[in-house]
Image (tube, rainbow, N blue to C red):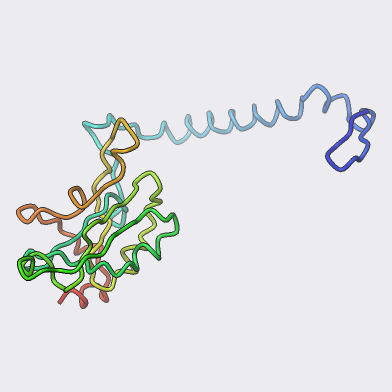
Length: 185
């Protein structure tokens, strides 16, 4: 006899001989394996891609690396309102707001801006809630892959990795909703 977690006595006599030697479990596992083998023979082997030379095709709405967008004049759109950080279910976004000085007028759109903006890519679940919550259409998830890193600290992306370069603008028009397209104008 053995005791379970609720002090219920279970007798070995309740188990059949087949259950004692795990025959049903073994047959279930063999059935799953046989089903996959038959599917492979009938439908053919699943597609194999030689990554990174050949990348697996992704859908148009695939969510990849984040980008902080700039406006037409090259200023950062983010106003450090914090709505993206509040909307993030994984709590991956942190930011620190600062006041814009007169010398920084060409760098930031509003009086307030994010002096520190970080996304912990290890915590991010790529849900897109940050992009939906942003009233200024400042953050988007692109179709780019997150870089492979060798240590955990490298996965905390700051503004140096997130803000798009002025010379290398990222086209996100296919990802924008009508509401976001109107907010940008």
